[in-house]
Image (cartoon, rainbow, N blue to C red; front, side, top):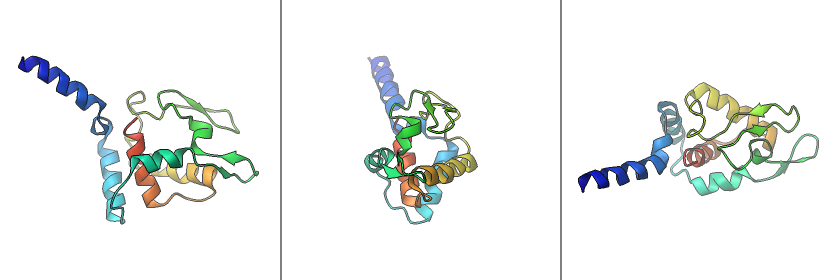
Length: 133
């Protein structure tokens, strides 16, 4: 009987956001909290993911324009057509394992999609959302 509970518990843990956390994502979240983030809401991160703004060419743009909404699948850059590896750390083990790389892509992609850098709060909410995927 204890064996059955152990299997159920391990399955539930595999589905939890903690299962996708990495030392780098933990360090990033700690730095965001040190910068003033009190709570990072995954639902807000999800809403921001599809929030549309106009890019420099006047076209509607969101994070999902290139990355899509199914994080288990590859995306494609809207201008270069370059393939973007899946965002889900469950599918792409390299995701969120390098702090500098995560920050670099936040900076570049926020400017591309929103015309500005993301705030620390937005980054924390995106990261919280990503880690639940």
